[in-house]
Image (tube, rainbow, N blue to C red; front, top):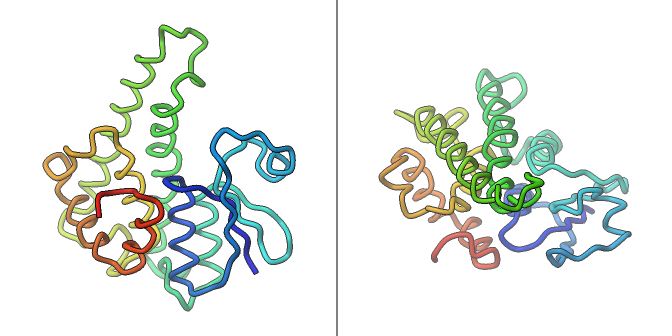
Length: 207
């Protein structure tokens, strides 16, 4: 059985979605924010969630990587385009793009103090982070032009990953006008049964 270390309104949202969509059982352990625990540091050296403990006891961090692994281990759930599908390239491209660009910008905004040694530089770090978020969402919005999903003709974890990230935007009210294609995808997912259930515990967007 899987074991997931997570907390509300964190990157664990997309991993919980993956496990739910795959229909697999898992134990969930909530990790209080800011708490330093050596046992947790042993499996997450950066003291970050999510961490997925695999059935063989090994631990895995990085939400995008966890999602890709779960999609591979549970192909019947169709969490991602198959490895042999032409759409697999888009899935991998956007998962890594969002992980390295958008998620990174979110971290710089919410934890700006970690990214400067000058306390007076915190606001500048935040401003640059928002600009990077906006730039990445513009790219993703363009990729959704004329299509319903980021990779292929059906929902994948890339779409859920995107919705999670856009929900964290500090100026989320501008999403419908700034990125209408992302808003269209997000509106569809807000009605998805699994997304509704998870949002009830994560409070990612207004119900």
